[in-house]
Image: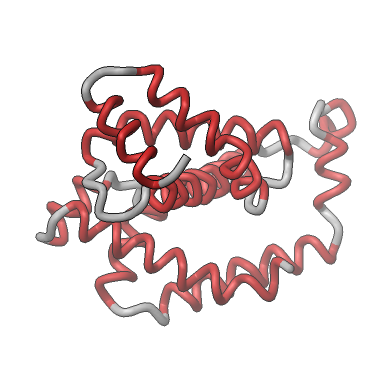
Length: 190
């Protein structure tokens, strides 16, 4: 299947043919799972995130303008979905406080023992500081967009309204900001 085949399938999906989207899923499923696995190490969670990316793509397909290849568009959705998953997981884990006396009986105790090493804590702190420095070094419009999205939890539409620009511009700014942060983080994560 080529890009032209993809465009035909996208056209069919936009006309209401759900089976055409199934063909796109079958074609790209393994590639998207492999991509997501770069961010989300747990295989079953990576599959869930990949599925969520396909669901988001299906819902957003009416807005797909075909200015890029379908896979390029799907790739961006998958990467952003994986990053959003990691951010939400980090928020959840920081909110899960366990009383010291209950720690032995806590069903996630093995994760506490595993992750609470001095090396892990140091790396987590270093990653947090690196992310903060990377965001602080971004141009103002990228910095504002990524902070509104990741720290304030604002929707793309809310950010567009607040920043006085189109939603597509907000998406582009957030994508560019995430790419810049990823580049700086890459040496730490490898």
